[in-house]
Amino acid sequence: MDGTLSGRFARGLAVSPDRPALSADGVDVTYRELHEHALVRAGSLLAGLPGPPPTVGVLAGKGVTAYAALLAGLYSGLTVVPLQPAFPAARTRQMIEAAGVGALLADDDALPALTALHEAGVTLPTLFAPGGQPMPALDLDADSALKAPMPTRPSDTAYVLFTSGSTGRPKGVPVTHANTAHYFRLLDGRYDFGPRDRFSQTFDLNFDCAMFDLFCAWGAGATVVPVPARAYAHLPEFLAEQCVTVWFSTPSAITLVRRTGGLTPGALGSLRWSFFAGEALSCKDAEDWAAAAPGAALENLYGPTELTITVTAYRWTPGRHLNDMVPIGDVHPGHETLLLDPTGTPTTGDEGELCIAGPQSTPGYLDPADDEGRFLERDGRRFYRTGDRVRRAGDGGWLYLGRQDAQVQVHGIRVELAEVDAAARTCPGVEDAVTVAVPVDGTVELAVFHTGVPVPPARLARHLRRLLPAAVVPRAYHHLDALPLNFNRKTDRRKLASQATAVRQSAGAGGTHERRQDSQ
Image 1 (cartoon, rainbow, N blue to C red):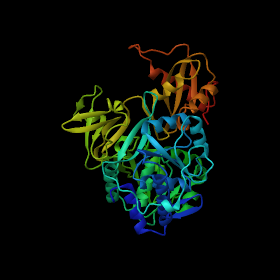
Image 2: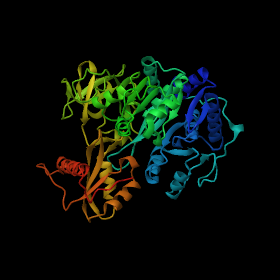
Image 3: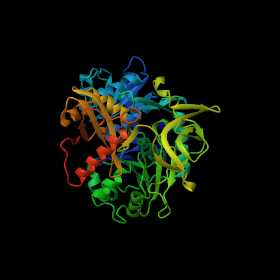
Image 4: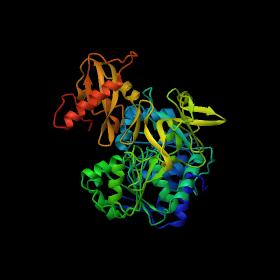
């Protein structure tokens, strides 16, 4: 069972049965306690259904009971679909239906999300310990506790995560136990994590990088420490108080901590490992973080969800880089790479679209129709087309150059601009809409240009908040009589992006713009 995610928790349980597996909201939960909670929940789930559902949704945030719910889903032997309670109910319903979710495991804070889902027409058997929820209830029954996690095969799907879809619906990405087994076996050989480590947990459970935090920690008998939003205002104090030794976040967190004065030299002295992924990492950000955490090795990681969490790694060394951005490193052992030129033809050059084949690649999307254009068969290998442009970076492996298509990273969340376009067009009064990305403080914000009736920005933002995750709701809205066209008679996105950037810079320099609308 060591090759499964449940097996990794079992390793930690054997090493640290009475040490905390989780330290959240001032509460420590030992490995033994979390194991027993998960066995009861998994057993209650299976006993309360007429037959096992094909998949189980885990509707959970980052509170204490969220982790018991996630682990219970894995212990049940079923495919787990992590669901974010803060997402719009309509979007979550799309995920539930696409993945064939037959039951829900919810944490203590999920009642508002369950109510919204019920109002959106979702009616699923749900294990929700506090009771009083609108779904058909499954009872938490200690007598139904499993004796041990249910067995699974390497080819079984461990979990399904959803990425943005150009059609306006999320795309489901199945990740197998074989995928994760290869991944964590490599990490075990690369890092020296042990029982005394304490891992930050900055990612929501529906973000694949959360699996790095959880199962690197639990495979080593270490402790997971969820980082609440309020902690970023005083991050050095929080990390010192919690004795955090391993940090992992998107690079956007560096900008946030810098703004709050937390990046002074030596301020993050408890850290011995620092990891960043989800966005390009600048050398300036890496230098500042490394100075604040002088005792930590710093690595830049990269990987689409389709390639199981991260598939490259680069160890940062201060003062050795001529580029503005930190390389993403070499692809994990056991994988092959292929570059495509702008026409989609394989090239032997040093720059192109990165394609990767190997044991971390998903078998394909939940909907086979989504596979078209994303996979390439060559010499008996199936390559995943990442859509990312890279260049050889000498001993740094690969240097990330940007997206090949209209997909961007917003605060670490990958979103296809076409999905935002499609959502904006559903707003009454909007005829056409085009979304562009605007660079802001090391990350990007989204801006929408729309035609039709001059819809007030606040109304359009409210409409999109019902359809999109909060982090990717555009921050600026611009009405046009007509969208500009380039010489190919296609929408001139470059011109729109330039216009949005100029407006954003004007606002940042002290100007204002009446059509700017914060999404918070």
